[in-house]
Length: 118
Image (cartoon, rainbow, N blue to C red):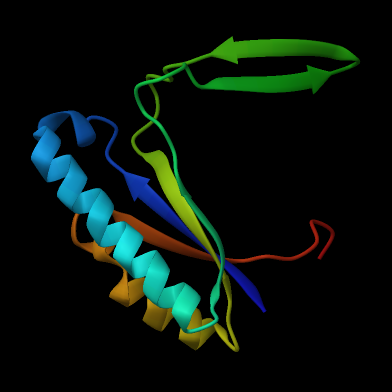
């Protein structure tokens, strides 16, 4: 079963770290991804940039596209990255989320992947 771990961070958190602290956090997450890959659980993982580029949202209503450029002031959290996993169960996905280093400074949201109609 496919599960996604979404790393939900406070929006300004990364700006409070020194460059060395940022590298250490990134290295922890890279090591975590490598261990998941070695265990045959990792399908994909990425960190999302918070500096380069501006987030954007697209909505199409009644055939008209609407572009909303960020930053989005109403955001209480930002998606900082994700891990896409192949797990045997929800319990296994939750156990992996507890192992994730980001759980110490962010929230790790566990979501099962599936079709939007069910």
